[in-house]
Length: 291
Image (tube, rainbow, N blue to C red):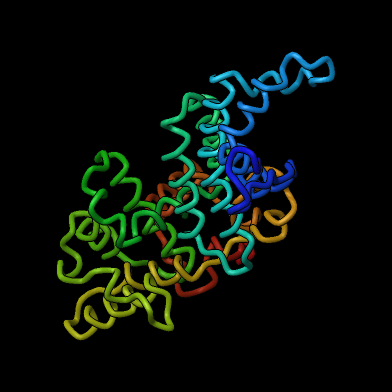
């Protein structure tokens, strides 16, 4: 290393710990930083009788190409692992991690395998809840109008379903509110999430609190604001496993409270068909789910 780079700077190789994404990324990056020195070492010593066969790969361009791609693939896993080590993760944090991973994996030469693994993990999550989190995040507002009509219909249904579940009452206006939100007509176009950064309240919560206050002053419905504030206040149990597990651990709400997309759709159809007169008393959901 000194012969190639001199004595300035730290060119040490980092060891690999297979149970830590950040260790893996650091190891790969340290090898890439000294690629020139390692290839020169190979060229100077390959014909030595004691030269290890395992190091012959140092002169293989394909090895370095694969190593560089692997290091780039591990980066978002390091970010996800770091973020999900905290005990106060929100659904928005998890959704962001999924997005970062998917964006990276989908452009990789290993995209079919990696996105398949990510889809399998996504299937373990409470998808309707995570989809609502995505849709109600103001940073995603610009892409909502690109969603297929079928997805928009599902989101409005999920909004009504979760409002009933979380508040134990009905909200006839919420489908209309959700439609206005997706079409960019629910709030003033001048509001931006950056306006709420640096406050004691998290930006998304602050945004929806302001939206709720504005709607109340104008005598408008606030069911969607209430739903958004509840969803962005939810935490997810990730910390205990993310610190020690070598793969991105299961991300989910408590299993007993989880709803699959198909089950959520059927429950909504049941309520719409047979009525929801029980809201205001102890609802069917409360008795069935113990929540």
